[in-house]
Image (cartoon, rainbow, N blue to C red; front, side, top):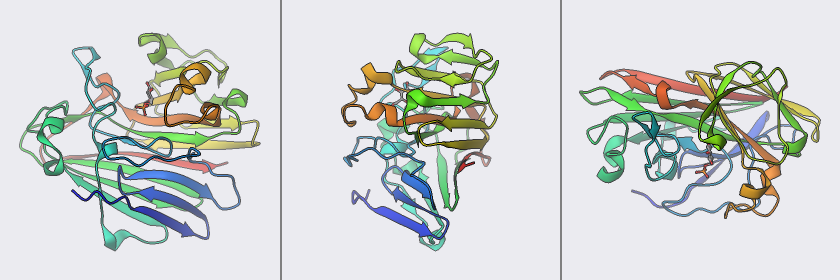
Length: 287
Ligand SMILES: O=P(O)(O)OC[C@H]1O[C@@H](O)[C@H](O)[C@@H](O)[C@@H]1O
């Protein structure tokens, strides 16, 4: 394992991004002529074994604490090992618009690999493709390189920059069922109103494959979030009380972002047969 922290600066006439090889983590993305859209905190801490805050953490092969027998499984590290792994860059793909990362199961410590939902013999080849222009497209593809079925959860845990989350609304979720992670995963349904934020925690797993619009009154813009291969969308903002306790955020930074995450988790975890591959993709743009 290479423990050098390389940050790649991808810049072209349509936009720019910073991407970290540690975690294959998009740290920020700014389409030309706009404020940053993928949010970066005031301080970014790089430390082996610790997930980077902000940007787009890659969640794989389990989400949160994992999920087994109908309940959270207490796995560690939270959100899987991909975001604390050193990914490899395919140098042939590295341009001013694009980078492709790879990660193999045989690079993962056995005790971590053993926590994969399909168990210690899980084998995979993962690719993470990041395309930067006036849109940002991120695609995670996982291939089963073993000889037994591979089961995993995954997400692109995208932190979107907003002027103030309390003046932000998300549309595209009307009548959508969700699990309220902030209320012991109670099943609920979105009303006819757009989702709004009042400074208390919002942490929901929506059963939603659709395109969402994030209306940001403070920055006078709308961010469109499209995706494929993901039957669920997590929306998360920690709110004031929990947000101000997050050690790698400054006081008040909780209201500068909202996470809109393309997810496969819990009962929608993916199972692929030997030789098969599965892709999840998310595209972001300013409308
Ligand atoms: O602090 P972490 O591990 O990056 O997780 C942040 C949040 O990530 C979200 O995806 C989860 O739904 C939340 O429950 C969690 O708090």
